[in-house]
Image 1 (cartoon, rainbow over the protein chains, first blue to last red):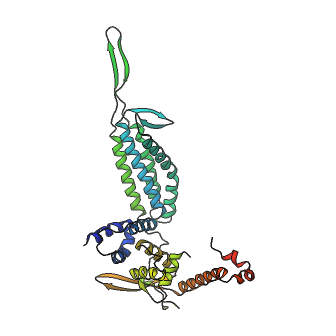
Image 2: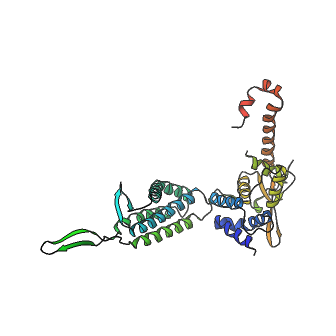
Image 3: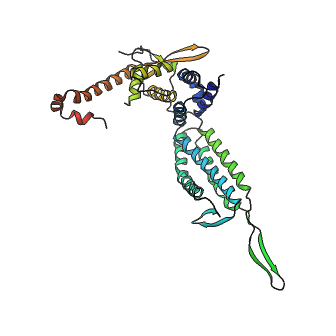
Length: 227
Length: 113
């Protein structure tokens, strides 16, 4: 197998397995034939077209769900990093750490907002996609699992040990808390989001019912060809 | 009908072709303007098959792999001809100024957005 063929095969994984079983060999041939001789990487154009084509075949429900699960995992990762820094007072409920770059803070906010806005469309798109299949029930179950994964975060933040200053005769006074306190629980939430994303991929890894691929056995008897 | 779709259908006018041959032929027919990427071609073929414009007509084994050839269906040929005459009509509005006065409303109805 040439490097180009190996990389092209990898790119074809943008398409779901059921589609690849049907089409991958043929598409690989076309890709290899269309590539200029001597190339060892697929062209940028081909790469983009394959990724977009794969997303199109996987469908809206898949794209939204992966975005949702990806944002969830990123959020858990953010919370973990947050717990390794000295926290700053939360601004309208959005936590940050002392000296956090504005860009990261803004990206975190936008991500959190996008995650919230996506919750309902993800549920609806999945239900529409899986309606009247054996998988209808599994979808809300996965969705609820996602919501549940979002909420233990705050509870798992361990409280920082208090720091006291003591002086003779006057006893001890609280002077602050010892930060940072690493919250390892966030890593479990992060793993949970990745697992949820994988589960959603598996549930959605079925062909959409309306889909029809070219099939030699269904071809009509009339002669194909132009006028 | 978008231009790449038009050229993909037109490339099958002389008979069924396989994937790479369709890429070559569309590029040739369009004077090098329409250069489809492999992913785009198969997205188009999926859609055209679902619409009943294109069908799989032959499957042969070349170098141990399946090579599939696609052909125009009669409804695909019909849609292509309808699009060609629509474009010819739209073109005449410019190439034959005299018609513009006579045909009046056609310009509004068929002008592409």
